[in-house]
Amino acid sequence: MIRSRTIFAVVPVCLLLTGCPLTDHYRLQEDSLGAAGTQSSAGFGGDALASAGAGNAGEPSGTGGESSVCEATCNANRACMGNSCAGGWIAMAAAPSKLVARSKAASVAMGKAVFIWGGLDNDGAALDTGAIYYPATDSWKYLQKDAGSPPARMMATAVWTGSASNKVIVFGGTNANGDMIYRDGAVYDVTDNSWAPLPMSMSSSRRSAPYGYWDGTRAVFFGGLNALPAVVPGADRFDLKNWSVSGGNGDPGMLGFSAIAFDGSVMYLQGGVIGSTRQDKVFSYTSSTDTWASLSKSLSARTGAFGTWDGSRFVVWGGQDDDGFRRDGKTMLGTSWSDMTQSTVLSARRIAFRRSGWSFQVKPGVIAMIAGQTSTSDSGDSLATDGAKYEVQGGRWTAIPPWPSRESHEYGIGVWTGEEFVIWGGRAQNVSTLTGERWAP
Image 1 (cartoon, rainbow, N blue to C red):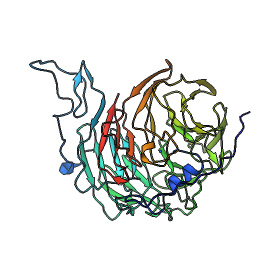
Image 2: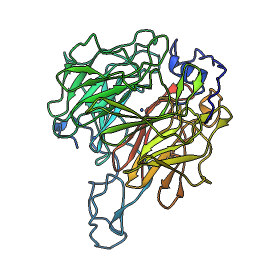
Image 3: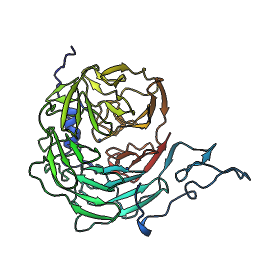
Image 4: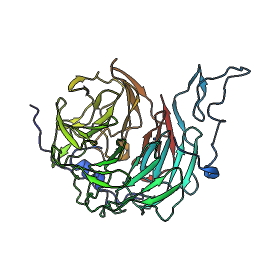
């Protein structure tokens, strides 16, 4: 039996620097508990900005006088080489002039595009604007406000409903000071380029920065924080018409900062913290049947581990236990856990809650982990800019180099589109940035 130990909290001070809100309870909460650390769009007329850089995506390319034809369709500014598209990091086109720099925004992949909305500006004011970014053309569309737009907020969660209905649900979040938590939001219709308020539900919980996903029928919002701050138990569900609340049978309760993955129908959780005690438990939640289950355990009690679904396995790596940051991990297939190969290219780290650290499936059996926090220092210098790919069956690690700008993108958005990982905005040296970059394998 793995013994859980009590964590003695050390609360960092949020310096009153530009871009740092008066109350930053996300960082305070995660560090005090030892935690660290959340898809094809229709045309939009002529409102999108033109692409900066090379010609049209998928255009035949060659060197010198070659006339070879590339059979691959490549995103903007990615050369076609041997019928495949060049990978690595490249810079993003400049954002629309009306899109101010921001941190703590909501974001989600919409097919191969990236939706960004809300957050805090450089002066710490909450925003009610956003944009959509298209890697295929390296172009942007600014989202105009209308009568149905959600009020300004930070730390909201966005969920895309899939191509059938093609909507983005923005839910929850908090005001700029972090002392007013919301349980409202709005639905953005991608095709019509319009907003409609979410119907109110007094049974749903107030949640800031919950984990959100679309299960094929409904949006599910799990966890998140309230104004105390404390972890919010259970899940709220919205099917584009009505709200419902998850049942309490088997619910892990006020569990925060777990490794989380979603396989398309089931959400998986490993570790996390309840109160001030790290956990080693593993749970699953099937939203279609509103069923919680307790699964077999294997890893040590930890918080802030990277969690990913690789197509058939729940992958958990890194995080922080009572002895420090980890660089080990395991994969769960069915109910059985297997060790991951020890990494020689990725340093020990944890996901910093909405601050830094992302993991995703690159393709079946291959995952990637990028950024995260590498020390308990509260400065931006503790945030990594590199990452690694991991081939689950072969146990092989491949380094992902640091992104070109080397800016920390603290509280920026990080989204995997199925083709590219897009990281944009956030803060660098406590100043909001408009820098963006994208990576392809």
